[in-house]
Length: 194
Image 1: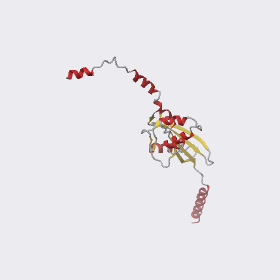
Image 2: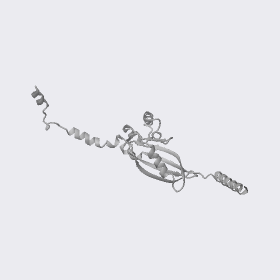
Image 3: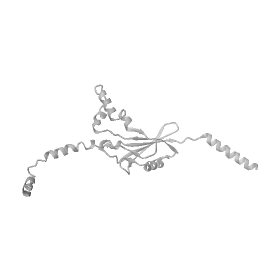
Image 4: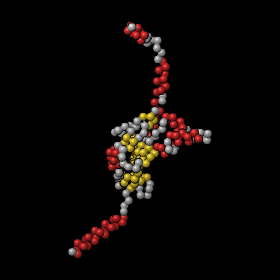
């Protein structure tokens, strides 16, 4: 009986047609860029705003994430501390995360311009996919300095994931400077009179 089983499993590999597997793999390679992947690197943009609310400088750098899809709190604090001064003292004003989290079946709708015939379909698609238009899904305000998580992103959009760190110039408080001068003048006078 064991001989019968061995005979049943002996297959002539020359007779098996694997062309369809090779063809499938060849076609599938064309779509590899359209599958969601973990985020390993992001771009960080540093924007410097003066007291007149004008952006006076923008710097950027590419950051490798220590943990896949997470910009750690420690990395974020380090980036803020290293870039807080740009010849002038700045304070942290805002943190924004830009994360394209499209699903592969949303690419066509996202990439095509809206037309009157497809408007209702686009509205249905966006309401199904998120809480509104695509843009409000991608750009989010970061309230606290904690780990920043990135959702998986389609391969061709990986280089668009970013964190925007906005710095605003520290205001020179004229009243505080005048108060300090008055206090120090009063102390000097009191010391002299004693």
